[in-house]
Image 1 (cartoon, helix red, strand yellow):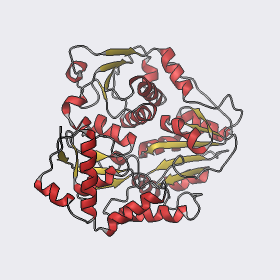
Image 2 (cartoon, helix red, strand yellow):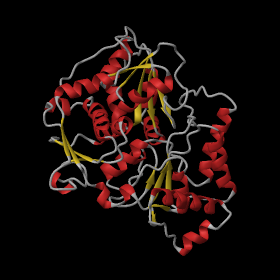
Image 3 (spheres, helix red, strand yellow):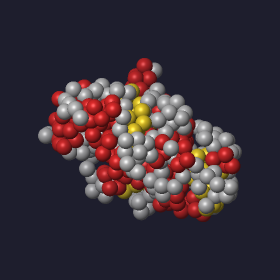
Image 4 (cartoon, one colour):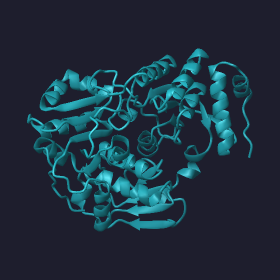
Length: 417
């Protein structure tokens, strides 16, 4: 197979400006991926604006200098700085200045200053069946699975190149035949009380990701819609533990009204029957701290907290004072609501540190602490925090995270699978 560009695409690629550079990046990526053509996209979500080094900043500034602008709606994933001033970032110069320059360059490219890993809860919800180019693993899996739009994982800096050209390679999950389920992940053996609990979905997502890798599967045995935040947590954990870009839940997600409709063949290639013992092992695997007597911090909001999750947090704290801080990561779309309704002031008075525009595992916010213990209800935080922050992790429900933050030591309420 060879890539064929339209006359318009060839003309853009021949240019020496920023749009030409972007088109050449997209076209060469398409060739490497074996795509025969480029397709038009409806929107993009840009992960490449998080500072990892000076080269990323210089790349974005070169696009700006070349007069490039995004051709489609483009939201931004988290950056390295909290531009709202909610939290103190410990990033020092010259890295701090380069991170700010990078964020400014993406603004000049025409991207929306959303700075959230949950753009789908900030009003960016492409239509089912539309082709988009999204980065950030949890956003990709939510976009594909829950919204039914079509995207592959567009990494740095292919994401912004697609946004500028308004095109993406026609391969992978853009193609309907690649979106069919080949295996079944059956959770009917778990108790209804466990499946109804908040703690279940990051656990099951982590187990799912490890079991399926990058395969497309359909989850069966879910009697009721678990809610959008539960699906958000499941997808984020699955994408972190495996390479999941799309999952289906029979009777819940839009492409899977039932198992038969979504399966690629008359029978699945494999059936994974989840037992309570498997779920318990997966839950235990999310913790790396060995029976600590104290907790040094709690971090929640990966993916970013919704308004409903902040409402639950406030109810659980109930005006009490925390002994250790809770770092609550969210986007500007929620922060503005918290400020309007007075929740930000009340939560901060209790000891909550609200983090906007970024999160505690991608930029230094929490104190450096040898042997520190971090508690979280996020499967994604549990996966990345030990390597990115140096803290050992305890996984627990949001309720147990709050009680542990108030006590300064671990508090657990077991929910049997």
